Amino acid sequence: MRRTFAAGALTTTLLLCARSSVAHDPIPSNLTFARDVRAILSARCTSCHTAGGSAPMPLTTYEDVRFRGREIKEQILTRRMPKWHAARGYGAFVNDATLTPHEQAVLVTWIDGGMPEGTPRGTLASRPAIGFGAPETVTTLNVIVPARADLGKTAGSQAQWITGWTFAPGDPLITAAVLSVDGVPIATWVAGDRPTTLPSGTGFRSGSRIRVDVRRRAATEYEHAFVPRRSVFTLVTENERALRRAWTEQIACGALRGGPPAELLAVRPLLDRAEAQLSIARAGAPALIVAWIRGFDPLYPRTYWLVRPVDLGPDARLISDGPCRVELTLTAPPTAR
Image 1: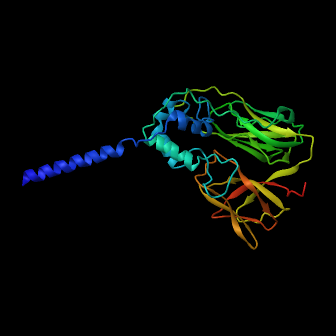
Image 2: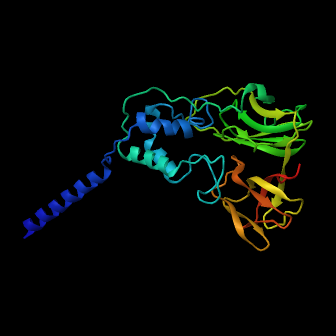
Image 3: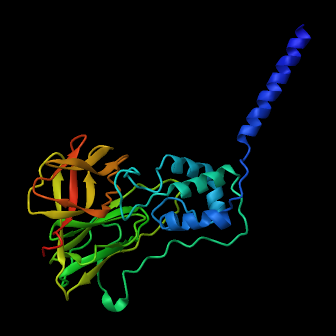
């Protein structure tokens, strides 16, 4: 009887071990790094995850990615990377940096499938900068941010309108930059952002004092030493034509906006807590969800540009599930200047 029990126990143990082994084996997949994964990483990750980039580790070679495969999977499934605080499905944004469900599935399936390389194609290039237009139609103004300085120097501006911008950080610890004109914040850049272009026919009026404030993260123990260089905030400017004016306003959640009618182009949360649900309420109309911000980090003060502008009358109220402040980017209605 004891022998029978021992034999049964041994059989059960072997079965459990076999099941455990199978559970940890790679799930077969025909996805490869060369054919399926590298394009996603190049489009979504390597603008930051490159040597000297703003992220602490490069992801530009197959070896880099394979070494951190499980960590990458965790970041993907928890949506901590790419860095983006607006929950998917609550508002639609032109500058959405998140992985699509398909991209997420490809990466996770590839990692679970043992991360096969496929036919090697070399190192991934960091994502190239996207131009603003033909050189003959664009003028630029560069605001220089000295290395290790918290503030960009004040610069005079002769341009009448600002219609776009981008930022080239000279220090990988810089996570964000906020540009102000005559003391009013109007433009932001967050690590990984593509160049920003305002809607056609719209511009910020420039001024005599332009300044850049930068945010920096702490260095990690596994980063290589880096000598910071000056950073450059590039503004796209126009002088020749009259544009619809864009401007920014800061408003407390729950307060009436007041002011003249406007179109809402973008929101920038100014939060002292990790989460806020933002909606626009108007008399006689259902509340319109603008964004649900989760895991907010002040080191990444991103502006969220709406796919479709929202009409704001004087009765519009920004509502939330708790106290907060939000910076609104507005423009005059199409019939106004």
